[in-house]
Structures are given as C-alpha cells and as structure tokens.
Image 1 (spheres, rainbow, N blue to C red):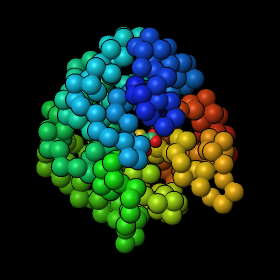
Image 2: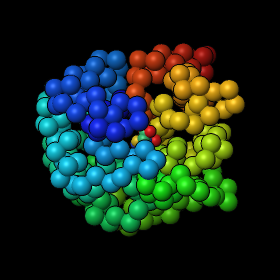
Image 3: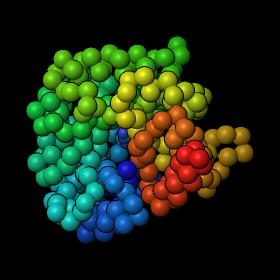
Image 4: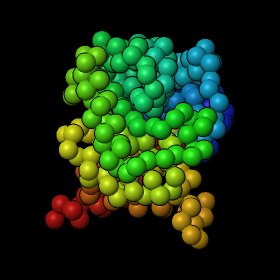
Length: 259
Ligand code: 7PJ
C-alpha cells in the first residue's frame, strides 16, 4: 500500500502533492514501483495535527480520486475519519475505507462500509490525533489492542459488516509511546487469531529514530526491519512511502522463509 498524502502538513511528504497533477504522477509512480493499493489521505493525523473541515478534505482528495479513476489497476484506499469523505471516495471508485478513526464512535462510517461492501481497515488509536501522544496508557498494549479488535469486530458485525470485509491494524504511533510501539511490533503474531488480514503502518514514523543513537535518516532502514519481522508474524499489508524498497525487502524475506 503506497501512501499519497494530499495535505500541506503531513510529516514526511506534506505539501508535495497538493497539485492534482503532481498527486496523479505520484500515484502512478507508486503503482509502477509495485504498489497494489494507493492510500489517499487529505487530513494529516500526525500528533498534534488539527482537524480539517469536511469541505476542505473533499477539496483535497476528490480531484486526485477523479484523475486516477480508470488510469490505474491499483485499488484505491481512502484514509479518512469522515463518513462523507469515504462515501464520496467510494463513489469515485475507491475500494477500501482506511478508517484511522475506527476507535471513535462513527456508526455512519460502519453503515457505509456495510452498504457498500467495501473493504474496511479497522485501525486502533487511543485518543485523537490532537492529544493522542500526550500520555498514552495501557495495562498491556498487545492485550488491550486484542480486546479492542474483539469488541470492534463484534460491533462491526452488528452493523452488517461481514468479517471478510475487515482488515485489522494495530495503529503504530496512534496514542503509543516508543515502548508501546515496540511491544506491538513484538506481539504482532497475537493478532493472527482473528483470521483477518493485518495491515502495518510504520513508514518513516518518528519512533523509528528514537532508539538510543537513532537518527532521522535511519528511519527508512529501521522501518524495513519492522516490515521483515512483521512478515514472519503473518502481516500481509504494508503501508509505506517507500514502495520499491519495501518490495525488495519483502521479496527477500519471503524467499528465505519459503525455503
Ligand atoms: C496509518 C494510517 C497506519 C493505517 C497513517 C503516518 C500517519 N492508516 N494512516 N495505519 N498511519 N491504516 O503515516 O505517520 O499506521 S497517517
């Protein structure tokens, strides 16, 4: 899953793809590098990011979705917390709702997923982007996220979403300290019990540079290490800015594991 942020303020590629033509070119580049999915987002969810109005988010993502329609074989995913944005994106051909707000109470989003039959990424987040990194607390982060998935899967089912539509994501960096992220990465195999595809998003996130001696420039390499470990734990979907590098790492990991 290649990342395309149509935002002025995303931490890694903010401001680069606000122009629809630049965004389209980037999407086609991600596809050419091997992305099977393009994840388009118009609201930054980095820590302390302020919410974006619905009209503004639509204004950012819709021209890109419309430009991409019919021009890519990749599946389009819409990264949003807003049901109206997800609805418009599905109408423009998106096939996946990447709901980073799955922990919020948004029955409208679940009804949309149920009615449309789209794939639904259920991502864990503690709090909201504005405050999630202030003081995240868990009893046991892996067990707490397992419980979240259990409860949410039951709730989604009661809204008419089929288990087959659901992709689970522990939400690395969303209301998590460095230790929480490391515990989740070490405990990914614990999420296999749900028999649903797992999605992991570590790409260029700040925790990757936070081990003692870590540097910002080492984030891509550190993220690839997480990716290789996650393959062994059964993760099947990787959300990344660095599609070519991720595919090379995955090919080697899978080749060795397959021997
Ligand atoms: C994730 C995401 C993630 C899913 C972002 C960033 C923040 N969607 N959207 N999982 N992260 N499903 O890229 O640092 O981890 S935005």
